[in-house]
Length: 344
Image (cartoon, rainbow, N blue to C red; front, top):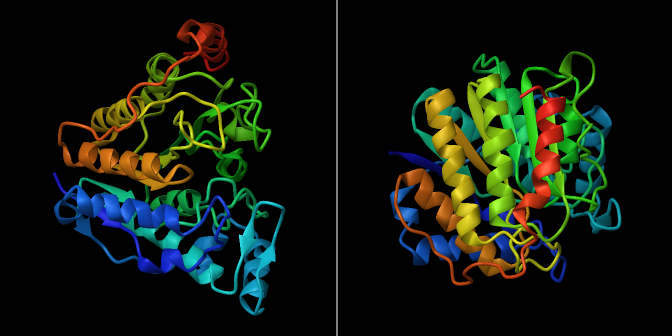
C-alpha cells in the first residue's frame, strides 16, 4: 500500500515562541516519524502553494486581502487574541493548503492509495471570511473544493475529530449538499458553535452532522458515536473521497482541553476511518493535521496514523489508557437524538 506524505520545511517559518501553535509542533512530528523509521516507507511529494483561484474557491476576497496586507508589513499582527500572522505567514499558509491539495491530487489520480498532510498553520477554524483560532486558510476546505472542480468528484466527506468544532469548515459548506461535514467535539468549548441542531441550510440541510460532547469522555464514547452515528451517515452519503481533520487535542494529556481519548482510542478512530473508506470510496482517504498541543502525544499520534495508512500493525503509546473517563452510556441520549434528527 502506497501512502503519500506531504510536508515542507517552510511550515516552521510561521512561528511565535510560547504560543500554543508554534513551529515545535510540526518539528516534533518530523523527528518521531524519522525515529520510528516511517519516513522512508512513505512516498514524499513536494507541495506547491495554493493559487489565488484555489483559495478564492472557498474564501472571500477580503479574507485573502487581509493576509496580503499583513505580508507587506514588517511586523507581527494579531488578527484576534488567539491568531497571529507574520509577513511570511501567507506564503506558509498557501503551501499548507497546497500540500492538502497535493495529497488529494495524488489519491484521486491513483498515484497513491491514501495520504497524510502534515501541515501548519492549521485550518479548520478559518471561515469563508475570517481568520481565527490559530487558522489562516481552511486547508481541508480548499482541497475538498479542488477535488470537485479539478477532478469532478460529486461528493466529498470531511470528518473532523479535533477537540474543537471545525466552525470554519462548517461555515464554508453549510449550504452545500455535495460536502458532508461531520464533527465530534468538546462542548461547551471554543469556538462555541457545533450544536446538534446545526444541520445545514437550504439545499445543504442534513449535510452537517455535529456531535457535541462534554469534557471527560474518552475511547468508548468516541467508539459508540462513530459506530452508531458517524458510520451509517457516511455509508448513506457514499462519498467519493474521505478527508479527515485530525486533531490530537482530545488526548487526555493535552493542555488546552479536557477530553479523555488515549492514543489507542485515536488509533482505533483512524483505522475505522480507513476501513470505512475502503468500503465506500475504494480507500481514497487523506488525513490532515489540525490541533494537538502536547508535543509527544501529537507526534506519536501522527506516527500511528502513518502506520495505519501503510497497513502496518501496532501503535506507539507511551501514556496508556486514560483514567476517570465519563461513562460511555452518557452519550446514549445524544446518539438517539442525532439518529432521529438525521433519520439514521
